[in-house]
Length: 339
Ligand SMILES: [Zn+2]
Image 1 (cartoon, protein in one colour):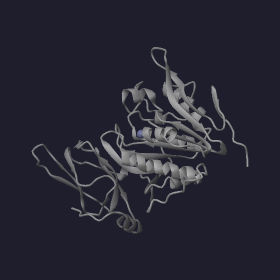
Image 2 (image 1 turned 180 degrees about the horizontal axis):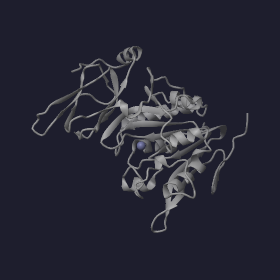
Image 3 (image 1 turned 60 degrees about the vertical axis):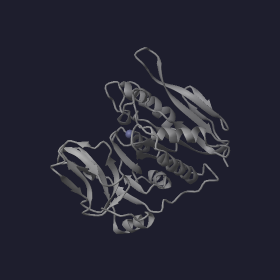
């Protein structure tokens, strides 16, 4: 077997059996002070692949931060084979402002990869992160939540036409995988295109630590590390049922045709039979009742949390389930009355 190798980045090196907490400079503020992101690199004593875990590319999406922190600092890495690169807060300026985008001209860091050292501030930041900590890895997991005001059931996004990405996606063992290349400039697409198969994990809502989702995601990270042989003791999980759907983009979001206040009849992650009411929209007089019904039997992958809509605002992300998956979902869900 090969010898374990050091992990190197611009300005540092982590030898086998060592761990490092680094505050890594990716930019400078208006004050001329460094903008530094927290990075923990754990190089196991045994040889193996290198994987990254990243979160808060959108500064207000917090659930993933806790997943990455717990893996980095609460797990015992005594028998780790290979190297883990843990990046709990990628977008520090947005994190400090508790906003989604970089406060500098509202740039989306997650559309700025792989970055460019001679371009905009966002692309320079992205390049420092990409070149040093993402591109050297053999696989990656980037954690997100829904945009504020909405919530997502825990699911994976990745391009399952890419065998490497499919391997990470399946090992993560979520019920739902939404397959697409991802937008140009997004972390997962650019790292995957550059040879580091990467998935996005969507979980819950912005501005929260949601413990049940965090615990599930931690089990899934363990499963991915097992798939890559990094943890001898862990086994690859099977989620009980799984559906892989092709992303048809915004068409999958059902949008409001009326403005008003929304009464959602189901929670995120619930299966809604065709024709059942998903939600109703009423005005301040509780009149003008508009009923939104499921156009097909599907799973509520994403739903509104903030109950106010203009016409055109998204209400829910309903994902169509085939008959076999429907039966599997029913077998795995405790029975309850539907409306
Ligand atoms: Zn996000």
